[in-house]
Image (cartoon, helix red, strand yellow):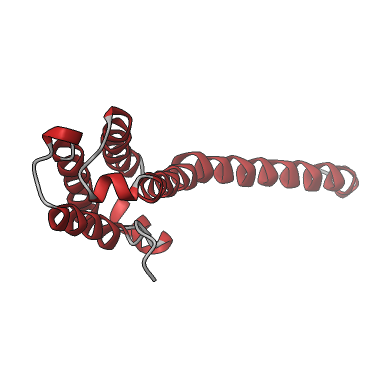
Length: 151
């Protein structure tokens, strides 16, 4: 190729390389966003939902007087935690980067929520106020969230 032809193609090549690099950066960013960041946001949203359920219904939960709606919310929150955690690639690394609970803590919290929902059935309550408070604290400690109005 002649030097004149190369010098006339230089601006085109520079533009083409810039566009290709921009597309690569955009696609990589979208992959990271959709496959890693959004699942983390969904798990954090689930943690917020758990906190919301416990704070809204604290008196009924600690007294073992849950109605069907509260029981459904607790079961749903427990399952969402585990499902959203499974959607995060390389969870053990991601949890350190984003400050998420360990897999064991998620399972322990989900089990405690299901236990509360199963035992706190209004007139058919199976457990004491101390049992429900213990389970409530266990969920809060395992997930690192607020589940009551204590200081």
